Image (cartoon, rainbow, N blue to C red; front, top):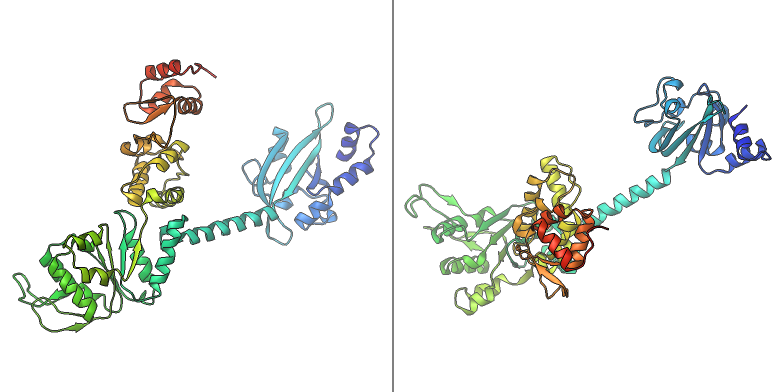
Length: 470
């Protein structure tokens, strides 16, 4: 007796084999059956469409012709009775691939069940196959869209989707298309060097050098020699001629970071370079022409330095022909999740770890923290967490203690019933209930998370009428 016949009898005594046959033929999913010896004895039209095998070619053969790549965590066995279906009685839905008649792989979901007689003897097996080809195409499109989204929000390694960052990207493109002197202004850690690099590598000078000089790292005499070069005997220790950074950057770009730190002498010589496009080495009167693009950056208010007489006004206006202000991270917090994902991906590659993200409690702290060190501080926090984290995601105690023990601004969170624990974090009834729920009402775990004693948690629960268990 066929499986279809048994199915018909078990379902309804009045339902005939023809109805069951029509039912199988109308299904969008592929369905086929095997006899007790593991040979295919029925094959619906959807199986023909999914596999390319017509019924006349499939019937009488084993399901091994489909070469499923994943059955019971392994490939198809060499013989039907070695298959795990005979011992387990079923195979729950599993994503795998079958081999189409023409040789390509088809993504599918496969289910299987053993059909038995009343005496528990095996009649055969029924298997269902759902074609995932369209879903796989949709997944591919989503992945491509995600990649394009990443390209949109990442401009030469500068990450951001917020409106302030889109303005920065627009300014970078405008600056790259011109030869104007650029002044990048922003707090420490906002990515001023990245912006300078983006301008250079998006410009016509990208095939020539980008020379970077940190003006705050050198004394006046060393900086003068570094920028302009020197000739032999110009000063004690000048044993040979040395080319300066301006000459090295010829046809390319020179990036002068921390420009607000340079002395009046260097300011004057820089002004001459900008106006005349020539440099003179220390101890030499020869003028050497140089074709350079000048980009400067500072974390100071240069206009205030001008007003106080520390910085030359004429140089200031020469440098800020095209200013680009960089927003601090606290002014573009919607970029934080994007940055966190970016740094996790980077450190996963660097450390060979497989961290998938951060806990919700960590992300809440990241979104509330002021980030005075900006993107650099966030990057350092993620790197710190990678040292401590041994799970698949970064948790509260993996991040630096100074970030973990942040002080919430009560004015932004106007709770009526609050208390402050020793770390300075505001603890209120709602947040305590949420923590208890997250920790499955384990008071000791809640105490560890907030840095309090277990007895203190009990006191707060009693004070705010929180039940001991839910």
